[in-house]
Image 1 (tube, rainbow, N blue to C red):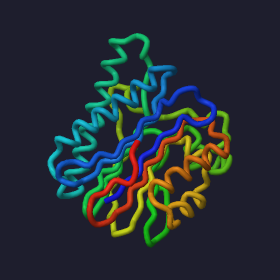
Image 2 (cartoon, rainbow, N blue to C red; image 1 turned 60 degrees about the vertical axis):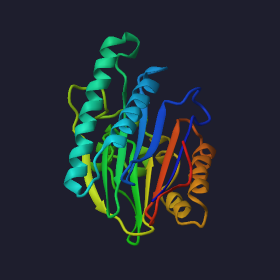
Image 3 (tube, helix red, strand yellow; image 1 turned 30 degrees about the vertical axis):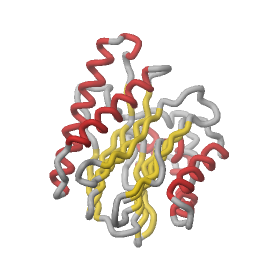
Length: 252
């Protein structure tokens, strides 16, 4: 298992409300998480950082994930815990009222990956069948795309593209979308915030992931391309490559 993790504030924003981490636990299993905070200066930072810190601590203490049902239950339970933590913190700190964060996380084991998401941070899978987005954005523009009112290309420039239908920490309860996919050697997972997916085309992502570059170089190239195409949002990228053994190829 190899990972590369990078986050960048982009070319326009003055600070970075994204947070990202890939944690290797005591059982040699990886949890990758991207959180894109919202709620204005400081509040978005708090929400994304609290989310990452919760999962880092919890994953280090987790039991080995032996089957998909166990992994799905674990990540769902901890999403509920983080949601409660964020709501409590916002209620106790008025400067953080209304804060929240997107979430995309992947539990990566020897044979499968369990992916959970809330909001519009995404997970893509590259394997022998091709390259595909395996999460479905919880956003207004995605609903417009699915209903045929606008095209997928139009969605990237839509004036209401930032309106989310779900986020972590904004409601008393939240339902994450959770799914499990099988993994084979040399499969890739790409987790990212919308600062990447709004600026880099899927065929460009696939080309970079399929290149002979190191994971670190691939992640840096994705961020470079997002910045070259405007960089008007924070950009976070985690690349996971399913290989034998445990090695980190980049850090956040």
